[in-house]
Amino acid sequence: MLADQLTVPFVDADDLHPASNIDKMRAGVPLTDSDREPWLDAVGSALAQLSAGVVACSALARRYRDRIRVFVPDASFVQLDGSRALLAARLADRRGHFMPTGLLDSQLATLEPLQHEEDGLLVDITASPAEIVKRVLEHRASGSGRNG
Image 1: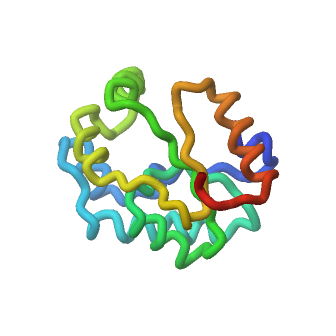
Image 2: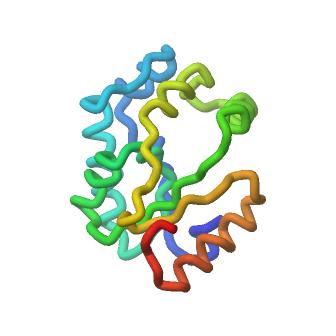
């Protein structure tokens, strides 16, 4: 939706995971930082090859976002924020995905909210997808960049 509004390519970072990561997640085993490193490099590399783009990516921790910024220093992040219950419900509704709902708690334990000095925006996911896109576009148009 956001990529369509911006008329830029969309990349689902889940498509860039090595098979070993997918196998671990399917088995309900959380990824380690060393598991994530080649994947984050692939995400950064994919984004760097685009003049502009939107990537759906679970860059949960600041160090993960910083690793992507090695490839794309001006990358801006939209961090979706929701309650554990809402996230669990959405994961349960997702069909055909390799990450089981049982990994949610490990993901939340890894999560580091965007810091004020990071270029990006924290968005409440109780809003509709259209409203979220509108908020992101407004934030982008404001030129503020910084989370807030």
